[in-house]
Amino acid sequence: MKYYGHLRRHDSIQKRLLEGKIDGRRGRGRRRQTWLGNIEETSQMKMCEVCETALDRRRWRTVTAHLGDEMAPS
Image (cartoon, rainbow, N blue to C red; front, side, top):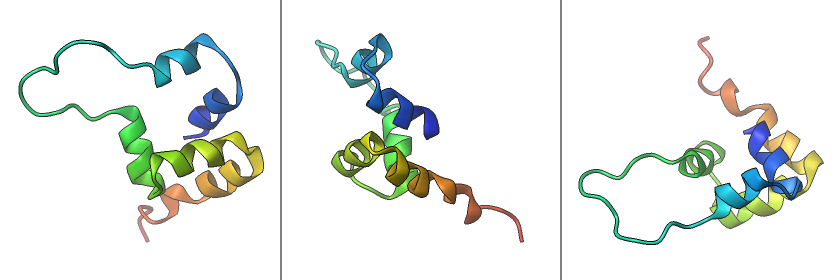
């Protein structure tokens, strides 16, 4: 999650690859999980909110600071 915030703030080849779309037909079978889908699910935010939040380092750190707390064993 922290790495995604880093990618969104800096203009790099990784950012272009992350946001790119591939032409052609979709393959058969179950859809694969995507990294962006996992980020959206974990943060419980829509992708447009995630993108805007990641651009602001302070807000992104507050979002990512306590993500694993709910899953930690008690």
